[in-house]
Amino acid sequence: MANKNVISLDKIKVACRDCSLSSLCLPMGLRPDDVDRLDAIVKRNRPLQRGDHLLRAGEGFRNLYVVKTGAVKTFTQTNEGDEQVVGFHLPGEVLGLDAIQDGHHGCSARALETTAICELPFDRLEDLSSNIPSLQHQMFRLLSKEISHEAEMMALLGRSSAEERVASFLLSLSERFRRRGFSATDFFLSMSRQEIGSYLGLALETVSRLFTRFQDEGVLKVERKHVQILDLERLGGMVSHPVNSERHRANPTN
Image 1: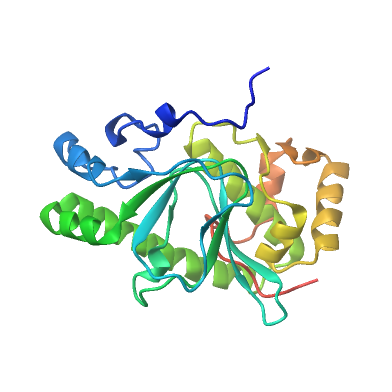
Image 2: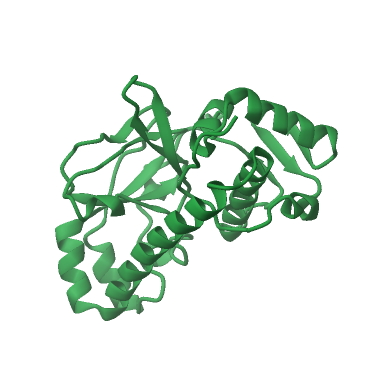
């Protein structure tokens, strides 16, 4: 039986213009000839295995990274040496934008499962953006999205209950999977309950208790990392201020 975790390098090397993620990634809105110019600077890395580092906090900033397949978490370390998850990244999402200002990465990134990454040298991307207005606009759009996510998550999660945080997280994943052409109500979680809790500022026990409660109430069906949303409307009703939660964590709450 074929190993489902093996990624074909031929599939990774698909040109940007033929990539199924082009509507989510940097090529969005570019003319075909401009997509080819962007494609010429993209480096397609070998797959990362689960637990492999893509980058480490403190490294000098040289590249932006786009998740091609799989999933990546970004995290920092507390003074006690514990991991603090700050984001989960799915196919089509860009990592490294936060390092543009200071010239070094403020957090580490590690693969949550077998993952393939597209690497974009920032100096070449910057030069190309100055000659392609639509690419420059796309870069501004991504930076604006980063800022708005941070503001939204601080506003929502700074005052929300544990129930609302977990519901928001599941709704965010649902929407992000839908945008990629996958089921919005039937998916696998690549992250652990512990990592979800770290991201949402909740104790592991709180996350586990809420998953169990949502299942008992008929909102979810959960089998280890396999999640089925049985009542999407009811799950949405738990969130008073819906946001597209993708990256940032809450203040700790038990």
